[in-house]
Length: 85
Image (tube, rainbow, N blue to C red; front, side, top):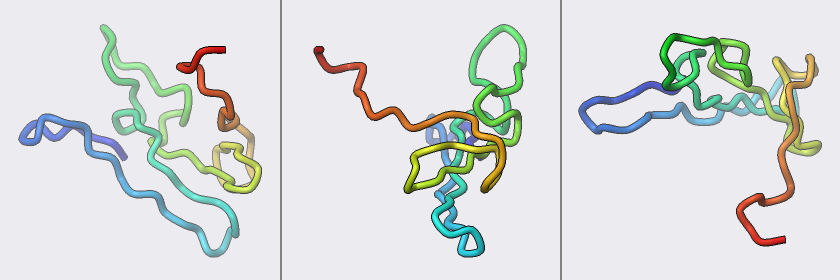
């Protein structure tokens, strides 16, 4: 799970893990701080991962889930919001 490395002054993320027992699924680092959202006045559980610190991604469909084949939590965006329409 992501954590702050004060010596390097940057966020360190865990590498993606491939699950052979669940073909097509990957465990990816959510990007939050061990299940807690970055910043803010008080700690708040991350809405993307539910506080687990990891998200599961299905490469073929582009969906995220709580666990392989479990409740979906979102979809990969195909549109870039930074580009001009």
